Image 1 (tube, rainbow over the protein chains, first blue to last red):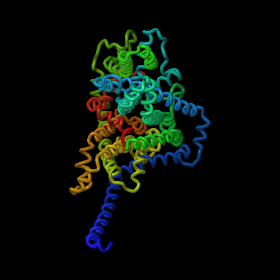
Image 2 (image 1 turned 90 degrees about the vertical axis):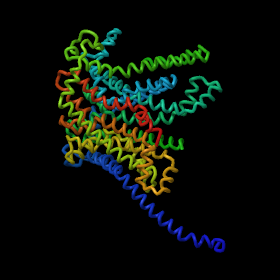
Image 3 (image 1 turned 60 degrees about the vertical axis):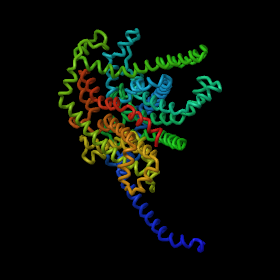
Image 4 (image 1 turned 90 degrees about the horizontal axis):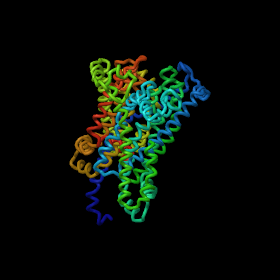
Length: 313
Length: 298
């Protein structure tokens, strides 16, 4: 070792020592720089998300005037009120129905868009994404006007086809359906775009192989397209479930919770209780009820995304 | 909706038809019918809003005849809004808030994404996951504690309060997709730069930002549309009309009293929706890239 490595031994130590210390210094400098660069992000995440989340939990244990600690008192009061159970039921019903419809329509339209010649796809895609581009609070105003009890233009169209008038926002069930219609109208284009991108990433060879094996259209869908898209479908559905479950704009503009508080979802009810009626702790408690279901969805979204990344690597 | 369910039966039909060519033709016809039905349903509300905005209040109040026709088109609703100090104030507030938030967001997320994608350091993986999780936190979950916090800082009823909290909506997603774009830049590029003696800031400015420009544009568009359309925070934090941005301004201030000026409301909503629509019309490819990047990159 010493005999044949003598030249290297004399040459290496200073070099190695020098490299180690510069490496160390570099690493130290690099991590310091990296920390400084991520500091604004950490401030936003900790100061505006993590801290408010903890503070919200603390708030929900206070009494109305925020002077005394009452433990789970707010939650107990909520559990005893019928309105709250209505809100919980309506939120789940709204989110699940709307997301299923959005995913179904988006899936269908993505396929239709994928089938037509590539030249025309851009134009159609551009047109069909318009509902997603308009801020929802504003497009809902347009829907509100179309649902207006005395001037409803939809009812006018129905009248042409001799269908009786629909009390869009006056009757609880129709109001629920109206909210779902508007949400589906707004959200389906997003699903369409996501699924179209996923469809385009399925290798053409798979379909060729399936065609050679004599697969029918249904079999191609069931055994090629769906497995290839499974991950993106679950990610978008769960993501949309989070956003739809926490929706506020559409309910606020369209019905504002009415008739008789029957169309409130968690977000609009929390707003009503916390900000408008001034019972901040109870409002915080209402919005915290969204947390468990959101956490479950978030867990699965995260798992889907990391799995997808591994597939791509 | 009814059309889509009816169309599901069609594969059965073209199987009986047999030949590949007629199968293709049927598939094409189904596609175009579905797309036309969808386009009509998707575009009807904005078109009806536009038709209403061209009517006078008298014409809207007249219940005789077809509401889908405009008999005496007029631009007076637009003229009234554009000369209305309050409405132009909303517009100004929206522009200030959006520009400030976009600038803040891009600065924060480009720096952080560069560090997270290239400099592995203690906790960087946890932080990247944390960023994605905060993106999944909806604004309606935290608006009440934030209301208290913003109130404690004395920023309720001020656009500065909005500039403070909007980054929670934009920064996580922008950082997340920028990490994806930066990670896709080949390592050889930064090695070459390091050999030439480039410093980290030089590497960011001269290599990463130019190469990842499409990603930066997509993230900027996202930040712009989100802060322009934000509704929950301004509704909760702002009650004085002169500090309102457009979304809540149009919804709360134009809709007042018992007699609705529907023409003006619709004109206001359309004017407020115009900036994101214009951005979308000119930068559609970047817009869509940003939209799909969340789940396919990163």
